Length: 366
Image (cartoon, rainbow, N blue to C red; front, top):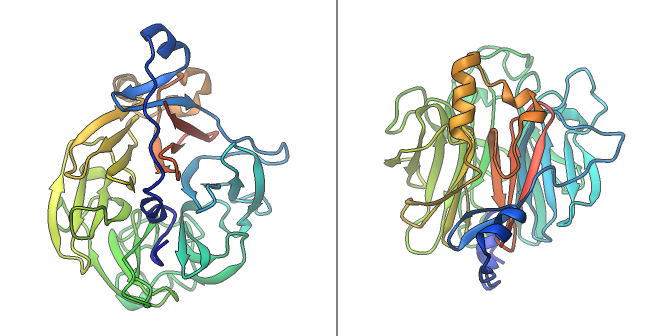
């Protein structure tokens, strides 16, 4: 496994693991087993997949990640008034609870990624709202380093790092997700951070958490953003590595060279929230009720769990997304608000949804 492997990149290093040949189902059997998707990209869908111990509860699940042992990490926003409750939970591939930690992120838990550096695995975490921090941790929760707003960037209000509070704005630090540039020999690749709810900047750090530079800012595209929520480095075979930004409120993906130069825009999404890759596939969870799968050339080749018409009709009628608060209206095999998604080592998919009581689903290759 290459040194730059992380919770997504290591999946490519395991490309030798064969993707199971899809079984042949009759339409009746397919419906009975809850198979969604099309062609070779069909999955059985298990909602509410991992089960929490009774002493814990979900509150708006935000992100998912998988480590090289195929364990699942889930972060939820949590509640600011419950500071002893963990924000990060770990499960095995069967959904069995392993451990919990991350109380310091309660009320602001948002993004997480697993990265392998040399022979050691680390968890990178983002927190927004009143927390406004990023951290590098062991997989059991020990903090390696933690940082607040990068004031050297000149993008933030006075006191934003020293006295974080629940204030929003383009001069505030509200980090959403991490990505990692390829290693250069024995030198670890730099760390990229999307300040998706704050300054709309993409920040660049070294692996020790030292700020180096940034690019982006507010705009309608072509190097500027309207809520750059997700970030990923696409190093699939067949092209040079490029940074991919899920520019959520512009409904696009934008790609950049490793040094931050704008390259192209891919449109046709409904609030894209993040990005992941496995072998030659790219995964894009869309907050408007579906998950899209793209090929190496960024063409959409399959969508799963599509419930856009119903969710958008509800938004039009109620002037807001109300189904997210009504679990009895969630439908089998349909998504409400996919906020993050990732592949596991076998090409299965985990989806975390922005719903008030939390939901993580597992899509297993059919």
